[in-house]
Image (cartoon, rainbow, N blue to C red; front, side, top):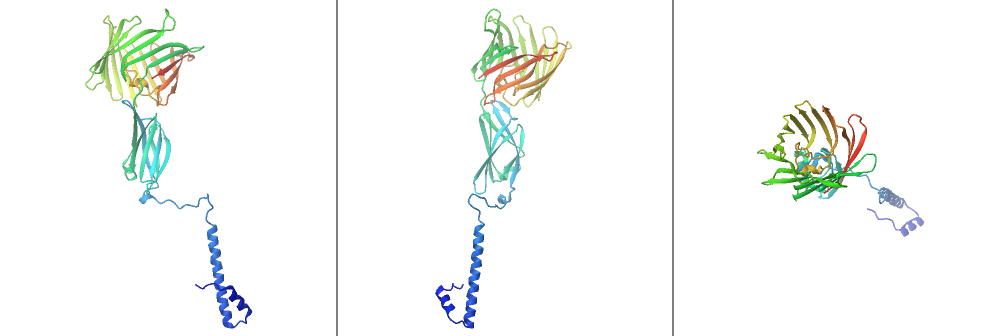
Length: 394
């Protein structure tokens, strides 16, 4: 490459007479200078197109890692096991951590709906999928190469159950809320009831008085009998329970000191429970329950005297605290895992004076109800009659 001509030589050349050879040399050097100037201008233009600080340049499209797709699609379901009950149809928060080929983590999140969700995972070589609900979390690690083998991924968290200690009931017609009743629960150990005390109104005393006490008896760690004592402390009735080889209740006997009572045989099938009742007066009744997702969704009762009742029920997605209690009645009516928010009933024969038509719950962060207000209307008039509020303590 030619060096630039020094300035003093250029001046000397300008003063001296020019020969043909000199003219040729000057033309060569001027051409070289022009080429350098063009190169400088091109370099300056190239530098002027560099983005200013804070302005992103156009990025080339990302290249998939090792030929993998830019994202993966997977079916995910969140679940929480509360005690021995599984809640696998719940909403939840999903946090996704994706590691790229350089092992740099990238985090994102979304809300899962109840049931199975189709989720698009970002590009990565490894993932951490974490679900959060009702104050507990669970996660799983999975490599991108193993995603194709996962038809559906269920992520399950676990938590200990809370046990109810008190219910307080209030009634409201046209005026203010008035105390209606109270139920208190005592335990031998968590989840194992010893006594349940019922308080209600009395015409003899003001306020709420003890009207009934249920006492629980166990044999070999299994509930064997529930004794019902009246307001004066006398044994009025009791339930005796019998079990099948699989541990399910197969018989309930309600008896009284007089010897009278009701027998119920119970057949527990997949999704159904069938009852057959024999009453002391010789009448009988067939009763069938249908369960779906852990909840009683339909039932039907037909008596030998021609009476009937059929029902359909709806539920929310929260925890029914009574499902964890081993507190059976003659109809095993406390076993639904969620809380009832609606019902439709049809009656053949005797009809009730009032029926519930609206259920309004308040819940805590653990998914348990702290308050329930049930509104009642006349069955025939369809007009609002009163409301009952229940406040729960744990």
